[in-house]
Amino acid sequence: MNFELSKKPIDIQSVIDKVVSRNAGAVTTFIGTVREMTKGKKTLFLIYDAYEAMAVKKLEQIGAEISERWPDANTAITHRTGKLEITDIAVVIAVSTPHRNDAYEANRYAIERIKEIVPIWKKEHWEDGEKWIGNQLETVEYPAGKPEKEDLDD
Amino acid sequence: MIKVLLFAHLKDALGKEEVSIDAAGLTIAAVKEKLAADFKLEGLDAVMAAVNEEFADEDTVVTDGDIVAFIPPVSGG
Image (cartoon, rainbow over all chains, first blue to last red; front, side):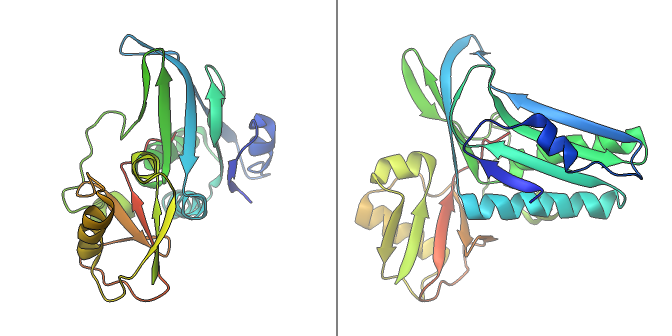
């Protein structure tokens, strides 16, 4: 169960423990947290919704992609769902590898891929309203109605 | 019949997450048109589709019993 969604607060150590390995010389941990201010607008809280069955599959796919690129890597990812307050942990990614550079790179790869292919959505609640957020930078469009092949398989 | 799953703003617009429709033999593009017509769902053009939990093309044909999910641009992480 290295790839999970959780309705309860994520225990960081339990995610790290999944990638501990005698062959590892490095473990990187990414902790995504709920930010209060975005472009001058104050967030009160967030709701994360997910297509659970597919989200877990896509997290597993990211793990498989990392194993292809960094064969000695171990990866674990837990993503929160439900209502989160400011500073709450939304996602924890742990990657272990024999050498530190790979651990940093593979971990970065994981969070970028989450933002591309894992069906999880956040709804921002502000003082004056609420909105489901599309991709955060609005740099990704899907003219074909879905990610292009390079978005999915890369 | 196929089962259609909707998320985020689409779920809010429909008022529920799941609906069964008679759409076997249609492409994903045609299923989108049908949903737009039958339920007045807007903005499906820019939305991805998944059939049985895998991303699918606009010209993928759905068959009886398929689970078709419409997936707006994601915002996890």
